[in-house]
Length: 217
Ligand SMILES: C[S@@+](CC[C@H](N)C(=O)[O-])C[C@H]1O[C@@H](n2cnc3c(N)ncnc32)[C@H](O)[C@@H]1O
Image (cartoon, rainbow, N blue to C red; front, side, top):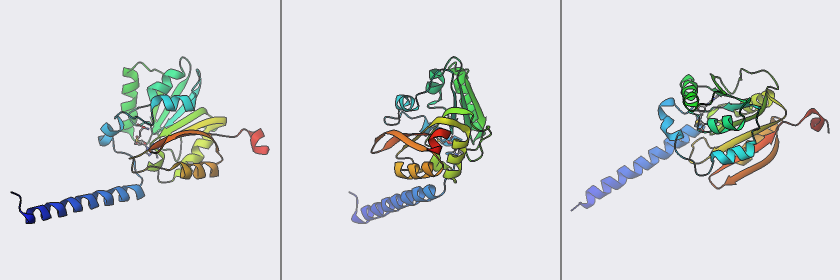
């Protein structure tokens, strides 16, 4: 039989473990940082809410387009988008971690997607010229970037007028960005909110860069 003292000690230890877990999650939330390559198994798990088909439907990739993926990680979504823009379109994928970019290169080659160009690049200073892309997307990335508005400003810069941006977020990511916060930050950088698909635990939101005519109105 378990003594009362043993169960009290076990309950205290459990309480401490829960508190430590909450403390760690709070610390992580207030210290944005890239998901380490060693944790990549988590990002390869199936996603019932922020699915590949929902992303494709909202982003609406078209054959021949040049699309930017920011923070592709191991490439959960990359193949789906690359396939949708074949034969002449290209996905340029910029991840701040070299190991992620290399992993993505190997994965897309293995799956026969020759139209993906992974590089190491920081969303806060994108290595692309102005007005370069028809569309851009990032999923579970924004909350990991210490200066989110700077990254949004960079996305606005590299998108063509009329270009589309889709942002995906989902719980239990400790860096989850709410739709309200995203809207406020994106609109401050000149994006126009267009549409979203969401559930209680996750969403995809679409924005556009207004054309110069729309800006003048
Ligand atoms: C949680 S993972 C998500 C990966 C992928 N988007 C997915 O949904 O599976 C976040 C990714 O964003 C990348 N990342 C974080 N901060 C970044 C930054 N400042 N610029 C570019 N990539 C960044 C990380 O290296 C990591 O690969």
